[in-house]
Image 1 (cartoon, helix red, strand yellow):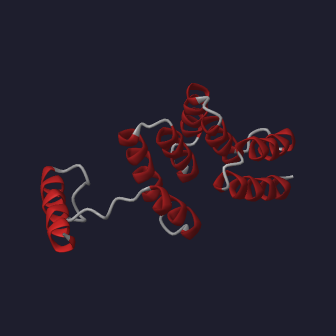
Image 2: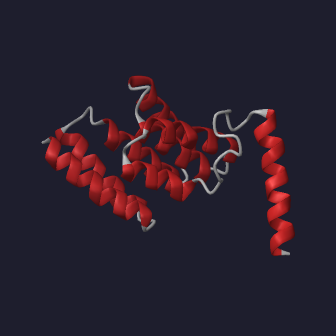
Length: 150
């Protein structure tokens, strides 16, 4: 049954990337019928709900997955994606950064996060992204890039 759920998740992820949230959700719900506690299915259903403009339900579901497993990169990725779809960029980038941290070594998840988070790495990598110096030097780097291209 776990193999079936994994296959349904693979299919659903492909459909989500194509914007077919309704069909993706059907696959994920089929998987949940067999494996009711499948965290990855629940996380991706949250993305499907957001794609259907059901933001409150989507965010609630993603946060519930995180509450049950606070070290699940997929759950943070899903919440980040829900936030992005719902135009909450600050929350989205925070959750995507958390997903990136938790996904270390998981190439597929790192790639998914990379696609959604267009920000460059912090200028001073050993300091948090929101540290004053990273913000200041990041703005300076951006200004220099604009000068070069303009």
